[in-house]
Image (cartoon, rainbow, N blue to C red):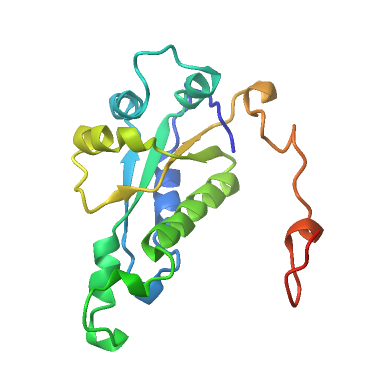
Length: 196
């Protein structure tokens, strides 16, 4: 996850198209495809995103100052209603839109998988990217700023851009450069759960 970008180098529109073309090929339950992607690549739109989702009364911290240098922000949005409608169709065997049948919110999970494809494509293109959350208290401001219908929920946002020339500007306290990655031995359980 890259948290600072070269603000003078926009992302090639053909690369933006590849990011999104790959995202829409993510798996989805019932092939519901209950996602949408708000692409913000005009400087005024990117600035409006930060104004809607940030605390404008406080001075931006180092994280926000770095993230605001991204020339591209993609907001993946999930739509629960599309899944509930899809699974009420004849081929799925349910006759209603009962949400209790879902053990987890696949609309969010599937949209997260699409977001991961955006991140992986950015890496393949030699770019930096970072997935982060939209603060819950900013969701209404975000919706209003961009005309997003209430049926769609931002599961987060992704900044994308060229990495800065100074590698020190790319990491954060929790980055792999400063914190060890948990090994497979610590997180993989074979056959049954075992305490470690």
